[in-house]
Length: 124
Image 1 (tube, rainbow, N blue to C red):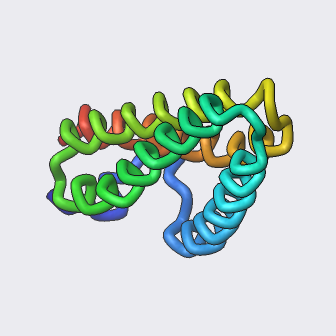
Image 2 (tube, helix red, strand yellow; image 1 turned 120 degrees about the vertical axis):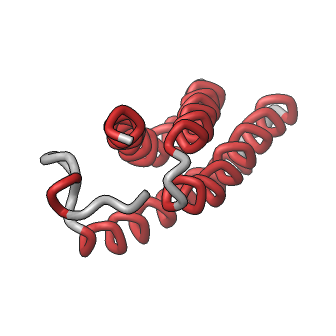
């Protein structure tokens, strides 16, 4: 299902904003996982890697599911993405404040995207 401008939420950002935001977020994510790779504890580092990989996989599959109009499935995927991202942030925080703070803008953005997904799910 494709929505026209009249069927989008008032709080949806304009399309031109997504490119710069995602460029910034992917840069911050890369810097975050790099800083996490410097963590000395192998168990913390491996947990961070697994959670980061899960959220990244969900990040790559979410757009195609959402764009197909399967808003219920995309909502499930983005919830997994948010949980894995928050889990990653919680995991790295005690060992690397830098890795933690670098991932926070991404967590905020995908949390906002979850609200948008909920809106489309309810409207669809």
